[in-house]
Length: 173
Image (cartoon, rainbow, N blue to C red):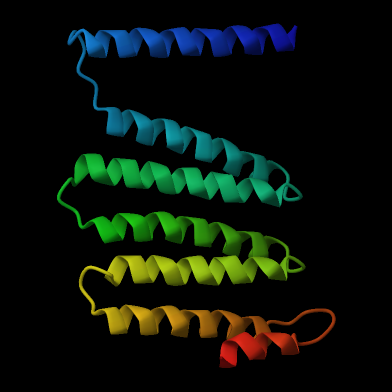
């Protein structure tokens, strides 16, 4: 019974979307697509976050949840502020993905590996945000200092097996 209900709901959603697209193409309806997509991405991201909040063992749901919320913020920002600098939009999106990995680490400390993509994505978010206003030397320096800080932090974080000595190699290089 549940499967037929989901199939019918999905079919109705597709038909409704088709009708909206038809009305848009016939110039009968003018929809702010950026805001619609922002809303849909936010709903999808919220659903994944709800899975994580409902069961902390489902830590994986944070990654697509924050990614979709980042897409929602990016779509909404481009609809509301079309003159906003492009680098900050990319930085916002990368920062949301990086934040997802930090939430994965903070929710389960045994997921120490999440510090690496979390730190690197936050670094890339900063580089993308400053790319239009800073020099190439400054953004390149920021990138390598961000990588060093990520691995330096990984060395400092406590683990049951002690400090991860290997993290000093990429931090030092």
